[in-house]
Length: 241
Image 1 (cartoon, rainbow, N blue to C red):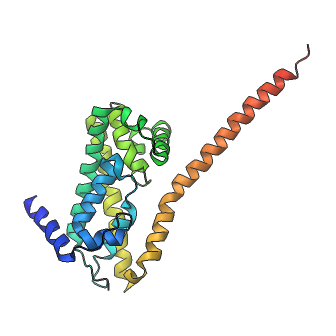
Image 2: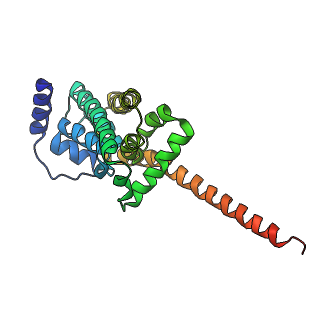
């Protein structure tokens, strides 16, 4: 662990300290290097304040910047990036779980952030529809939900062993899979990192599709319920006296 920490620190130092934009994956990696991967994933999956961080695009971009064909001034080590990604994703989720276990639903109830509230609603629906295991794994691939579900699982007193098994399974698939996808694309297409901005934009759009679809389904359900209520009222009004 000490050697790994030294490697992360060296990678961050090597890239230098540039103007840091926490919403921009390239800026995070340029300023913090591999250490940024760990910090962002830990905060996004473990702390409610990290819901806005670009986890998906950061992993994909980090994978791109590990390729030998990358022309960007930042070049990262794939083994260190994978280590940082896995450590951040797994330790972050477990931290979020324990925060939820200690603080309960009051943490989410006190939040006035609309995105967190929607994420909490979506997390509850995932748990109800798919069950505990699938919900924890699927949440990894949905922005905001992957931030909220971990403390929610703790608040719901999910057994620690059960939560740990599924969050580790989902965390490995997500962190390693997205990183290797970026690495594979960068290795296949030389100089692909020169198109990082449009690529990251596509990743952000794709990652938001599940959220948009769920919002649409939620509105349709609300309309159906309202229509049913109006229908019942109308039926009652049409009864003969």
